[in-house]
Image (cartoon, rainbow, N blue to C red; front, side, top):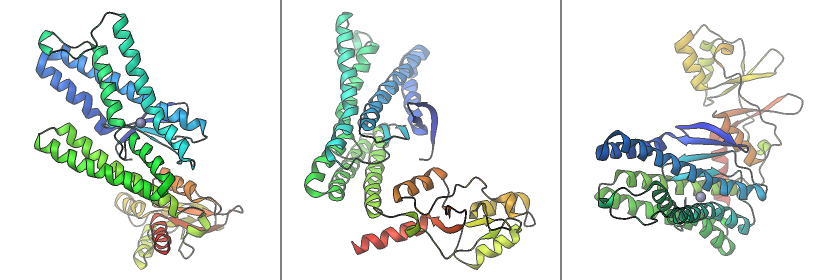
Amino acid sequence: MRWAYTIGQVAGTAIKVHATFLLLPAYWGYVGYLEGGLSTAVVRALFIVGLFVCVLLHEFGHILTARRYGVRTPDVILLPIGGVARLERIPDDPKQELRIALGGPAVTLAIAVLLYLGILLTNGDPTLRNPEFGPVPFATQLMWANVVLLAFNLIPAFPMDGGRVLRSLLARKLGLVRGTRIAATLGQGLAVAGGLYAFSEQLPLLVLVAVFVFIGAGTEATSVETRLAGQGLRVQQMMVTDFRTIPIFATLAQAAELLLAGEQREFPVVDNLGRTEGLLTRDDLIRGLSLRGAGSTVQEAMTASAPTVPPTLPFADAMERLRTSGLPALPVVDGRGTLVGLLTRDNIADLLLIRRARG
Ligand SMILES: [Zn+2]
């Protein structure tokens, strides 16, 4: 995801923060500053940091439950609507998905209960009293924030946890694809209704939430459809076999000619012995041309770090490699080091369209 920055790693899961998440402490800090100056602004910002920790604990509720079923989570992204732990796969057993979906809300509920007990034990006030009688204590605010978080997460629509619960229940009767589509359509409908309401009431943060819910619901539906359409495929069935390579010592002028001569946009770069040395993407070429000129070599402009994939790699792993590489294509190299194909995003999209059309 763009605009997401890794801030740390816990138990093999990278913790990422989306740039828009920082709007929260900024907004709350600003509101606090208007109300009571710098000290109020600091308290408000600290509150968001506390909430951030609660959201992370919620996500680790999902992550650790998933791990019990052998599902890894490469990263978790914090968005203004909460966290999204990216599961490597959805377990085939809907009962396991149900438990993973409930793992997060269970943690949030536990935090709220612990805060409630803590407030009672210290003779605090667990109610949200009228602000005229002084500010609401920090722990009470945090407890109620967790209650809101819990309620929001249990809305039975994607991308909220409740949507996963609904999907796993629907999937038992209707199958994964239809179950997902219903939960996603519900999520998008709610997002549109909520977004219009927030817009008419001039609640900018809520508009942002609605946008993220809408996008999240669509992403979930597409990823499930893609995964099912690609089931059973291996790289050798997905790769382009009719493609051109470019020698490592060719000039960028020659590379530009090759680019314009056909539809191919990414070229595996090979040495004299035919070994794959990297990948020249269209972006590499354009950047190389403007920085170094047409006389410079492919070697200077190519992405040397482009990973290669074996032809036997399954669909889901291949998609993951493409995604993490950030490249539009990857060279396919077999066990003997021979370049046998080119795995491109465009070609995979075409293949999936054909498979879906055939049913
Ligand atoms: Zn959750």
